[in-house]
Length: 301
Ligand SMILES: [Zn+2]
Image (cartoon, rainbow, N blue to C red; front, side, top):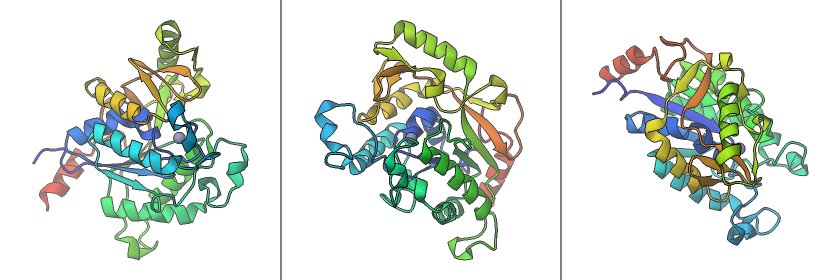
């Protein structure tokens, strides 16, 4: 029994593709090491634009068939990463994509932005108490870049973190579970600025993104944890490419439907916001400091 066998990682994301862009190398690494990796995606991304012209008929303003199609893309992406435990919050289609901030879809009944946070968090509490992750990954309070579904995913994840640990909250969902460490996805400003400069010089796209297009950008000092994903860069690129309606991957670069190039960065960065940091700064492992806990629990079985 290896020291990593008892490790369990839960990631909460807004749309199919966010997990591969933000955490693809992290997910591939921990899956390869034998950890249990669970992804909860909150919407099907029904409101997304579509890059390939031959699939343009899927969009919400035409056939409105993008959600089911993106389930297939997510399945392929998770296959590339070696991740088998993928769920949609409350079941597929329970919460609909809310669109970018300020669009009429924000007000649509059934969209994730209109969801009651406690009700939505209840679905996630059931997952937390079943899986019992030591580590939870989600977005900051602005959802990384202000998309309503990302903000809501943050609220739901943080609420579920609290409620899952409260024995008085819905005991029928399972015994209370306290997640040991919570991380928010981050991108150090120096890293993205250098990456975007290289993108502008070398990438094949007609334009280049700016730092405010990129989720989670912060001053470097905010970052507590950096996972070197070089060994898993190929899997991350393959997972991103599997989301072909949303992402064009070209070598070390990619673009979303806006056709603005971004660097495909295999090292992934985090800010620890709950729990105790392990040794080293930055940490190089989301489970740093927890191995005694995970291995002791495993050997007690
Ligand atoms: Zn998203």
